[in-house]
Length: 466
Image 1 (cartoon, rainbow, N blue to C red):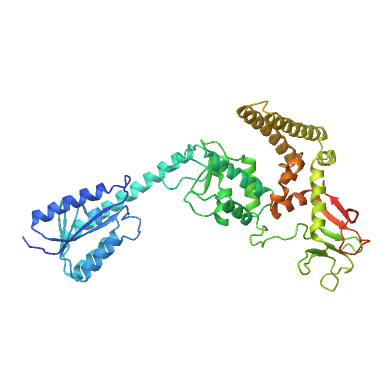
Image 2: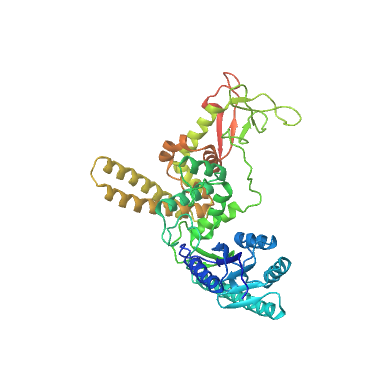
């Protein structure tokens, strides 16, 4: 029996489900016993935990063992089974060449020995490596088929980080995160940029499941994921309804798909400073007025010259103009004229009118409910139950009305001007502008009697879309 004084023990486990390293410890214990039985001295134990030999991923400990073999500081190898070393025949051949150059021929397993210096020894090693490769491939195929069956049944698969919006079972909604997804979807469909949504999440202290700050591509991926509207996807293909309840409606999900995959959508927007950029028209010449600052003052200007084509005789201060237009929009949202305009866009005027009346009635009822709660005529649980029921009914009417009229950006605001007025100052310019654009085609600016930049309500004429 040849004595070996610098033996390498190699152990590997491809998936440590318990995270306790028990499989590794069993391999090492058996290999140490084999070394003792042979009278060999173990110099080092090389361990790759939770790494597959079939996937082709790097195995740091295995690579270090090869380097030590090449440098001639190891004279034999003990491994629990040869499939712990290799599950790909090409790796076995590379390993054999390394051992040959280093003059190492002794490879022992707990189940037998291989003399890599002989043809018979290499034949047996190659056969076992091929069997191990086939076993891994079969296991992978079975795993894929099982995952396909799970997906086709609409069930989630385990493993990895839980999806945002769901608890660890991947079926039950996380109430707080699900509400954040609904808010993101509504604000995106209302025209707010993903960059703006990212800033909002940061300001609110909302992080990803792994505790990281939200980035624009991650937000986009979240809103495009069919999982949030109840569709099971496997390997990039939508297979059908999932077993979990959708966080947003399928209609909302489809709208997000159309919006966020539109090739004309700009993704490099700079921060907006002017609410009415491109929307103001000079009454004198009909030209678009440009947003042009002068010193510290924001203003809109009809610019003359070859590149602009305006008359150069009209200017108006931006801040008071934007305040006038915003107030007009908020009043319009509560106006019967808006309901009439919406009804005029479809053939079924009666349905649109009824929906408008229902929205107004529900809004009024919510205000009455708030008064009852404020005066302690009802308990908090009673208030919450009633509020949720009324809001659900009002939101359903808004969605039906927006579907009929093609005004999806307005469905959260119709008949809600009073509430929106209270929130207006807290909305960022992206959201404000998209509400304005949904109602206003452009704003005609009249000449002033007290100077070109002075602002009076008589100078401002919104031209309504609706």
